[in-house]
Each structure stands twice: as C-alpha cells, then as structure tokens.
View 1 (cartoon, rainbow, N blue to C red):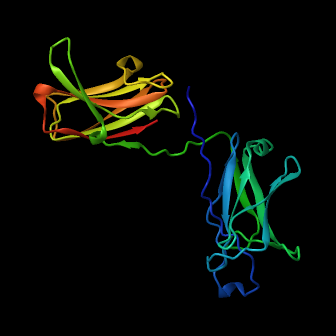
View 2: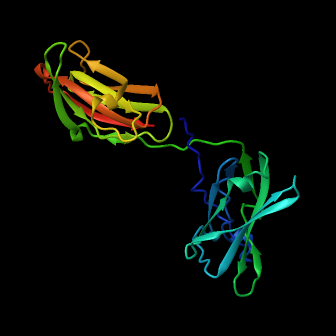
Length: 273
C-alpha cells in the first residue's frame, strides 16, 4: 500500500509586535519574515513567536492570544485561541484541523493576531510587517507536500554473521545480515551502498510480506542486488537501489565467497522508504 508523507508546517515563526507608542524612526520596525502556507486535507500546525521591536522575546504571561482568519467567500471568520508553548519566551501554537480547512478554497486570506490582558480584558492588536500593518496573509493550497525523511544509516560491521555451502559450486559463502527494518511509509525503497578497498562480493536488499518474519530464507525475497568481482572491484564506489515493491519489512545482506575473502569491505548502507 502506498502512503503519502504529509508535510505539516511545524516551524513557522512570526514576529508579531505591538506598537510601543515610540517614534517609529527611533527603533527597529517589526519584521514579517515568512508567509504561512496551509494545506487542505490535513491538519496544519502553526507556531508564533512574539517579539518586541528589537527582535527579543516578550514575556506574555497573563495574556491570551487569538488568531483570526477572514473567509470573505463564506462571510465568516475562523477564530483560534493560541495554545501556550512558553509564555515567558512568547511562543504559542495552534492547530487548524482538516475539517476546518474544508471551508477554505485554495486562495490567499487575510489574518491577524490580537492579545487580551487576562485581568482587564483589554485587547491589543499585534503588527506583522515593516509598515505596521496588523494584517498578514495565509495561502491555502490544495493537496499535500512531502516532508523530507532522513535515511536510515546501517553500519555493516554490526550485521549478524552466518555462512552456507552452495549446492551449485560446493563453495562456502559467508554472509552478514542487517536487522529487520519496518517498511512503513510507501512502496518506494531507495538505498545507497558504499564499498571500499576493492570489495569482492554481493550486496542484496530483501523484502518480506510476513507480519513477523524470521531469519528463514522462505520469509524473504530479493528486491535488488549488485555484485563485485575481480573485473569491477573498486577502491571506492557507491551504487544505488531504487525499486517500487510492496513489502512490510526490509533487510540487507552482503555475501563473500570464502576463497575470495578480500581486504575490501562494505563501508555503509543508507536506506530510505
């Protein structure tokens, strides 16, 4: 089953600063540094960082912050009370759910943030741009964006060693197997294998559809492989596997014929799913 990595915005920071009543030419104006992008079909998380005119954190204890997004097509507002992350440092967040996003067509919308003093109830508008405009813009896009996912780094020196005698040529083959890796994202499997010092042998990427596979070879099938011999051995080389196949688990194995025990080795395997 193919799954999609949804790109959830986690690190948007906005300098939303109130006017301190000082001559604007005497200090730095507020800075609107990024534009918010929201995506239909998913939950969207936004984080706000409240700064003063010197870009320093503001102690927001005893204040309630509210985000308002105007939807002119439906003549309605989406109002979200921001959740405190760290009121001493002025960090707040909110979650706009997939259900709330259904009312917004792909377009650009106006938004603003105000805070209310918890004791007096007095509200103050925050500013979001160099011209002290309290309104900033949120762009709604249709669909998802994929999030970058780092590779799993495998150290072949940690692989489990075993061996077998081939029925075909009667030779002993030593092999090393990685631990099982859960293939839980999609059906694309990419790997980069680096060998050094004229490695002679074979590297295999295997998959399994078993829920809890054992080391039994019947539980596994080959996804891709590459072999080095005396004719193509290299001082250093990185090859790639890139296959689309359904499986629940992935593991890696490299094999060396006993009579060809080389000084070379498999240095590193990077895997991404």
